[in-house]
Amino acid sequence: MDSRRLLLISNSTSHGSGYLEHCENHFKARLTGVRRVLFIPFALFDRDRYTNTAKGRLEEMGFALDSLHQAPDPHQAVAEAEAFFVGGGNTFRLLDTLHQLNLIPAIRKRVTQGAAYIGTSAGSNIACVSIKTTNDMPIVQPSSFNALGLVPFNINPHYLDPDPDSTHQGETREQRIREFHEENSPPVIALRESAMLHIEGHRITLHGETGARLFLKGNEPVEHQEGDRLDFLLG
Amino acid sequence: MDSRRLLLISNSTSHGSGYLEHCENHFKARLTGVRRVLFIPFALFDRDRYTNTAKGRLEEMGFALDSLHQAPDPHQAVAEAEAFFVGGGNTFRLLDTLHQLNLIPAIRKRVTQGAAYIGTSAGSNIACVSIKTTNDMPIVQPSSFNALGLVPFNINPHYLDPDPDSTHQGETREQRIREFHEENSPPVIALRESAMLHIEGHRITLHGETGARLFLKGNEPVEHQEGDRLDFLLG
Image (cartoon, rainbow over all chains, first blue to last red; front, side):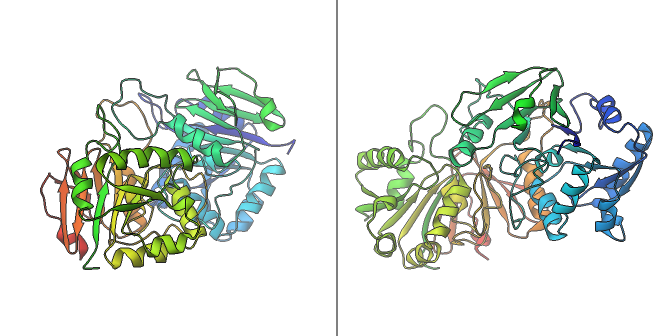
């Protein structure tokens, strides 16, 4: 996996800014040398509309976009992709569709060969070991929760700190991640909105001024700030 | 299912009151004539501790409690149960354990025969068609998302109304339930904290002053108040 080039983003739209605005520079940096991006729209129900939104935005940044759902041969499209952009939405629907099309091994192989991978929200979840730290409702049942495994940890996107003034009795996000570690071992990096990970070979750098919270099984969570190197998460 | 006697509660503890305090009278009403309750603790990791908490509380109310995880023969315990109490926690873990023990048909059969069923949170989710409207993290993968099917609809417990002042970009609960209906047909009754459904044969009554929001596929959501009859949900 030394040639992997990933950008895993908590969210596509941050409060008070437009679609992909908070991460535009990171997007462009990750896609240096890329002309065409293969978009994976399966997290939303209306794939055509989603594709139009993403296409318009990437064209503004100077990239052409093809959508995987319009490819005559999805396996060929993946095998020839220069770069992937996997948009957010429902993580279960996204992973289920990729499993049904048997595209998980093909995407993993292409990223290993050096194709860039950019994910937002659900698209970041499926880059990881499994989707077991998604926030989404399980509206469809994938054959497996195992995901692309491009990194040996899990992400929790849209991370929310516990609200000390809340009267709500549902589990906090932190409690949910602790429950994950009652049953599973992989580290979980919880990315607040606007935060993202740049991964290049064996280097991981955290970006975004909101920072992230790292949960390791059996340990208290640890705060990380913009610019921190997290290479140790690659084992 | 004419003899079913269910109490499906959004949450076990409401803000500013103790464990099962907001629903104590409903609990007692549902368990009229019952001496021993069979507790199902599988939603939490520490089953012994959970059982002790539930046992102490039910004894205060005048009921004896046995836990299914301590039963020498779980199938026999289910077949002989006077009443079930299924506690909250992680819905995936709860359903996964019941599937692994092959107890789903046995519990359904016993409830059909007239054993009372009380669920809180995850325990209410699994009484329904499926767990596809849980709020929980998918920390383990059940063989199926199909649940007990004691009623032909789904519950969303701990329902939260969209917060107009929120800057968070994650999906609102309402958006998540709409996503459910992009892929599925069953009605979803979203129970705010403190709300609950009494079900007796073909009668459903909503209790709790916070009320509930009903989502039918293809329709705008509708508000329901304490005392409303929702028998139409039984088809």
